[in-house]
Length: 352
View (cartoon, rainbow, N blue to C red):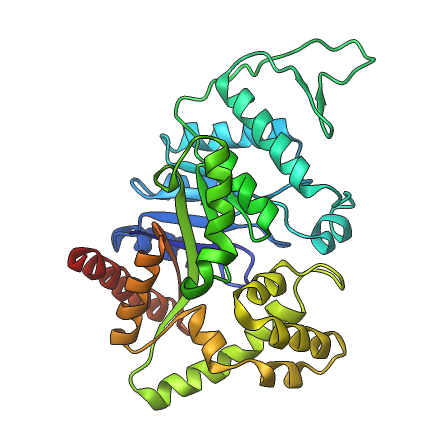
């Protein structure tokens, strides 16, 4: 498996610490660094900066959100970052959710599947270098009724630009299998992934005449090492409220893709009750419903032996790139955790 991480440039950490983490992560042998956008800083600006600080590591937008840029602007940004980095850029796209898209950007969240399909198609046409003429349900280029004629960019893509989609719903997973080079997933339980995720990805792959070997399955989880069972118990307890927030607080009152994903993997009743309590303002009550099994099932938390075993389960389930979110109070702590996790991934690969 390849190793990756995701950083969020707006997480309150000083920019110099963030850049130090990226540089040191490359030295540790990390293969890919994704930069999140969410509702903080934009991803492309940080990616351009990190491209200048690194030499080998791939850099990806994890993710740029639909609705915040036109499809052509997405393509321009991707080509610029790819050319600047010598072909090290990966374009990660995601629909986000109505709270961010409508609440922050004032753009309708309606029809995200169709908008994603058309965005990918337009991006690929722009990257291909031809004159841009496109007629879709969401986008028409050039805009009809005016004086414009089809154009091409004055800049050319010097490298291939792989497209990754962040997907959780069955329909978006099918589109990912059909149209993307990689899948950026989360809320991943390997034991339940066949029905919850891979069946839909494989359906999309079949539509385009491809197989799982043509898609980079990139899954992420927090990684943290506990010295013993007592320390592990404290770690798990500390993560319950974080998971409760994902299940109850992410998205809007009617749309929570994380809750839906957990529900499809065997926790429908618990996920529904956690959401109900969280929305009612009972945050502690919601966290109290989260079980140890739910926390451990979707993270890489445990003793070294436990983490090694779970990494093997992830590999056997079909994960190609494991996205590691290293725990730690300080930069040094996080890098130490990341370095050991990378070593364990390599150990698992060597043992088959």
